[in-house]
Image (cartoon, rainbow, N blue to C red):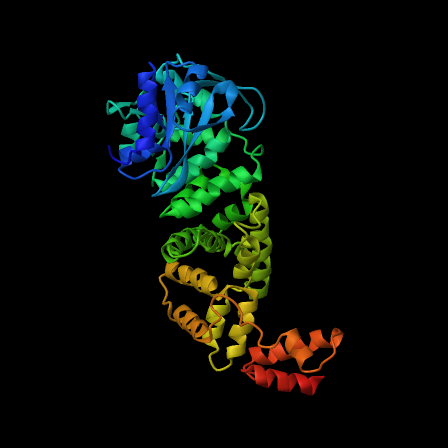
Length: 448
């Protein structure tokens, strides 16, 4: 069976042998119908009581209970091709609103629910399709397959959809990832939902999917405007639509171009470039008010970008300083063009010093995405990165030739003077006046 792991089949077979029925639900079924691979296996089990289900699962793999009261179990597996992975197994459940927020629900498991009852609690019709891998039967009570074919994103049930505010952001990233249109009634539903209850980490979780999973994140950004997300969560981005939408249109095109330029990057650096592309024009509305002054534009852009990242609660990813690097990228975004336009005044030291403030390779990608978004030549950006590569500073500044231990070995007494000597020698190295350790030690002795 296409894309089906033997571990998932084993779970389904064990459930069947115990008298129940296991149905794949959610993202795997959606991706299966779209003809794409999926690593997420969610299995819903009908006809078995929770205690019996757990006993069956424990004969297959280690079971971790994450919701005993509504019977959600994670089965841990390890394989040679993907390493450690999990399969989520649950029984059908009812959800009733009990408080504010996307977590404010009372959840009750019921293995005797019908397929339609269970599917009704889901967000969109494309995620409300069930599939039996043992019989190859698809159960589609709300027309999700039809909507997939029409690339239409439609809420399953208006009365339950509005209970979970996170679904508005899910609509945004789904629209972008699957290049879908949100149907008119769902648009109106989304516009009525208050988003202030959403914690920053959940906002970021959906935005991250938009920026890293979509080939055309511009679709999601346009959807965010249509659904009122920008008004409620990102007024800084919403302000880009006030200039006859020119800035907003440019930002959308820049995002799509950035996708094409970041496929070889780590996730952390790809996120960084995408966020910089999203934020690089945020100071323009302010600059247009006070006059198109580059300094005003840059200062305002940095401030607005920080505001966006505050909303996302974003600082680091896997130890990489995303926030600091995004700030640096928008701060220095004009440098590739400035350096190229002033070739006669741009020295190697300018590149080395710039590399202390920002990762030049990422700056090149952001600047090139913006140029491509306007249909402009990228000769300046291409020259910029080739020069940085020739100097070996595209990923960071050169390591100091001179270290404190060298000064001690040269007979220089440790103290405040040593730090000043190291700083001055490194400045000379950045300017290209010192290129070897021997030259550095000689110059240091002259400063001691």
